Image (cartoon, rainbow, N blue to C red):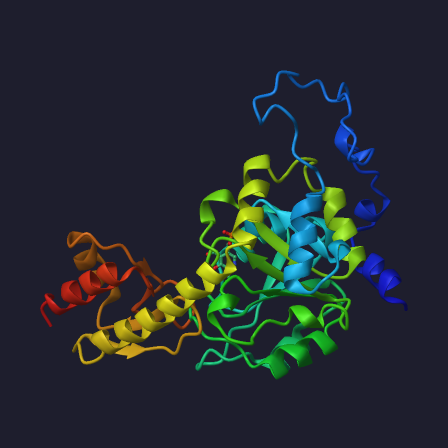
Length: 350
Ligand SMILES: Cc1ncc(COP(=O)(O)O)c(C=O)c1O
């Protein structure tokens, strides 16, 4: 089968057949010429925000395509990656019928999103050292499994998976492989975005919420074959990315020098934090991390979590995740915040 036919065969038939809502602004291209806009029932008095945003986010996608080395039609934008993940499930998984494969411990929203959409999940745990169990993943697939979610670097464990393992999964999976690269800026040379033209079943998800420093504006991205992007566009709300967000993202794309500097500083701070934490008697293990956070095993994670709260510091108790008993997930903060964390941990009784 040709890639396009293959993708349409994976998608939900009702979405393939869907005639999407045509928003007023998507029916024509705004040109250079000033047009009189009497098509969308807006308030005509200009305040900078009285018009609907560009429904297809043309300017943002053009700049993103340049920055990421993709074409515009390989990009979907969502209200955070959360919306991107949801649109993928809506477009490809039939409620009550299809399944998604999750690899616990993993990002919690995959399960929430599947449950909301009535999608059964198949759990294939990571190995004890948090690597991918490639043969178990390959064996788990049936004709109902439509999507597999891989967070790389992984959350909450912080490690990257071997790219060779990810490649084997993509090559053997008859459905979509979503590689969620929310933290990829912190892990050098780990992005698989350049693979999307080779693999029509690969969807790479990235976000402006982490290294890019814009969690507040909510912008997530999917990079994939244009046919997948078309299906996602069909199911999105017409104006899902607001004008303020589009403006801020365009600004941030011109500030990548600053972001690189911050990523570098966060990496250095992580190394300092790990050094500072080592040797504390109730810290039993620090797991290797390729992200801006790391997982630590404590003697008693709930006790240590509460003691940190008492000292005004909030971390994430990750203990409920599979194979993560007694762990805390700690985000790297500013130098002052990280010093405060080390002082707080050292002030606790053994
Ligand atoms: C692996 C992973 N993917 C996606 C997200 C959500 O990102 P966004 O803020 O773009 O919705 C998170 C947030 O914690 C995450 O850890």
